[in-house]
Length: 181
Image (cartoon, rainbow, N blue to C red):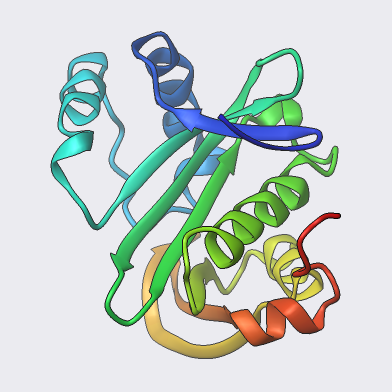
């Protein structure tokens, strides 16, 4: 398990599947995703069984430390080791939102990707209407670098999907990219 207090991430275990399925199917989560398809228990198990088949995507369970309580899921997708970039995203269970765990989780994954996984650029996508997430990503050091115009249909209209990215240099300039002594 990779840990950066107060959170860590680890591979998804079979015992995590139901809580992660419920998180995905929660409307406050589902409406933020690129697709709004509900997932059945059977579909969740089949998805989990296929996780190891892709070298370009990795999914993890987010947990609190030291309790190991599941707080959400981390996605590292579109992993390109030649050009050293990937997309990240995470979902926090509604009961754990507003406690700073999302920010802590992103700090942890950025440290891992830039300092240990040799990524040069990390990006994410966020719905135009998700102001709270956009502010968080800005505080973390992500900058808007593009948009998919009118990409998402939510709340009876089309919204842009905003692309935000951070390079390793920008990560280091934040002053947190130095190894711990």
